[in-house]
Image 1 (cartoon, rainbow, N blue to C red):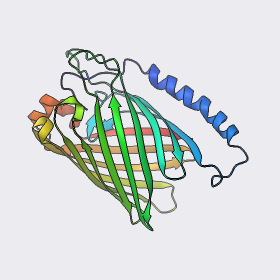
Image 2 (cartoon, rainbow, N blue to C red; image 1 turned 45 degrees about the horizontal axis):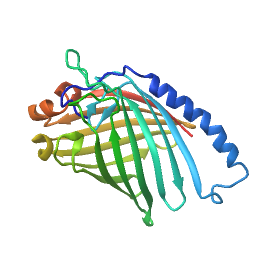
Image 3 (tube, rainbow, N blue to C red; image 1 turned 90 degrees about the vertical axis):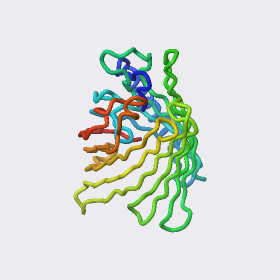
Image 4 (cartoon, one colour; image 1 turned 45 degrees about the vertical axis):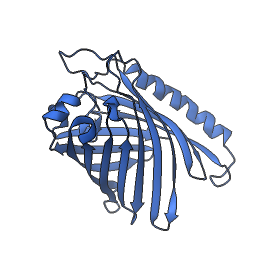
Amino acid sequence: MPTLPPLLRPRRPALGLLLASALAALAPSVSAQQAGESDGDRPWAVRGSVSALSDYVWRGVSQTQEDPALQAEINLEHRSGFYAGLWASSIDFTAPGEEDDGVNYELDGYLGWAGELRPGLELDVVLTRAAYPGSRSGFDYDYTELEGTLSFAEYYHVGLAYSPDIFGLGGKGYYWNAGGEWPLGESGFGLKAQVGYYDLDDAAGDSYNDYLLAVTKQFGPVHAELQYTDTSSYGPELAEALDDSKLADGKLALVVGWKF
């Protein structure tokens, strides 16, 4: 995310707690409403999640000044493959000593479709509007992004995201990525890897690569992930237009989430 001017620190983690409480309260009512119906009988499904992160790293760059974050999501899915939802996270774009941008959290609304094109090949296309409520004048980071992901051969995926005005910088952004996720035998553990290339030449005058390697573990509805992320070619132009380069250095982060 941008540090165009500065970014923020989680001064309002209460947002995540509030959303988590709302989602937790909604889950029993949804289950009760759908009781007695099989998954194949009902056309709609409501799903959600809450997560705690030791560091919110997005496309190789910390969005919280390397501090913890809380996240929550809720979406409505139709059996045709169409879905819509809201996602929120505490963030912190303002480094110590920088002017406060007034932003304490990110709120994304999205609309998409996911389905099987043919056996073994799935497509997920989603349009997202990322907003940063409370931003002060001169700190407009809001943007719209269209992303498509092809999943194939059970474990692999490739994707491309496009924004006509990424981070409010007045230029286009393209994010290419490829990766996979594999189970480690019958242990319940998994391995995840991804490589990305963020083309920000038009918006920020430079581009960079990012890398992710993670070990995952499922505990019923609880998902845990220990991830290592890093970047390369994150130069001074990006540090000036976006985040400080230290936020793009290699780092470990722990993510624990509950899905319902």
